[in-house]
Image (cartoon, rainbow, N blue to C red; front, side, top):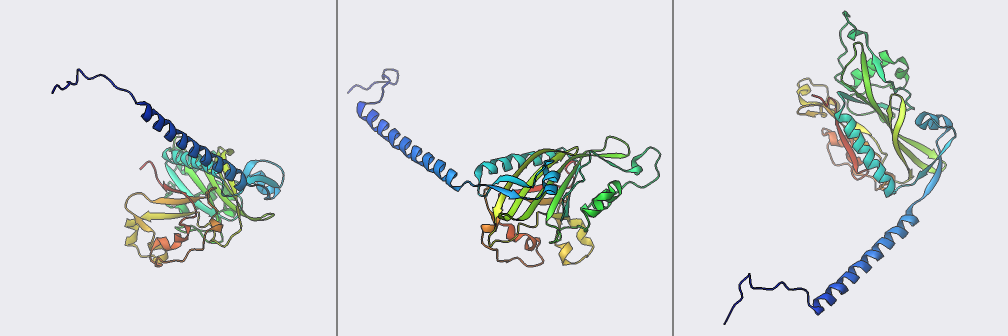
Length: 313
């Protein structure tokens, strides 16, 4: 019997039967894909709702520098808005990499403190004043009240690790490395607001970025009222574990877990999920665990961001 070597073999093609099978399978796959795409398109239009939500003239002007009392917004779930939220989160991470210090502050009213620089006399040439030690959000809050006195009426509650329940909104200040004597440049200010509305009933969520006092990026979404837990806290702050050497009580000491740099966990509203439609959470973590403060946020958003307090260290 004679065998052909590899060099003697002729390249072959598909047989007629194989071609028929391949064409049939391709037709099946393309048909299934067309049905899936059609279903997605139909359901997307059916599920998408655009609402006119009243947030008040002062709030709309504060957020967007626009007149009027209402905003037109998509109701959750909306996956197009979720894509905007993903881009926004990426921008927040990029800004954090360029910052030297990041502080989260809680509030209950609209924020108007979005400066380009923060003045401090201790940085002047020849100054004998001690430089501010901004090693905690509370230290930054106190410093901000000196540099921007009107901020004291906005950030009027002390903050250590967990925001007070009656201060459900949040601002995030990202500071630049110091370049000018006597001034600290503000890289960006992020704001997260969930406003309870009655027309229609629910919560209007707005997440925004300001640079030098001007709005640069934002996304928003409307959450209809439901039986779920409140979307709070918007952040928690973890301190260095070395601080555990000082006993300050369980409520504070449980957050002294950061092995290196202190950091914040920030929860951004997710347009793809209505957290108020999710079932209420049954707590399981003990009070000694920091998770007891935010375990109910599980499943409420896909946008959890970890921000180091001092990224450059």
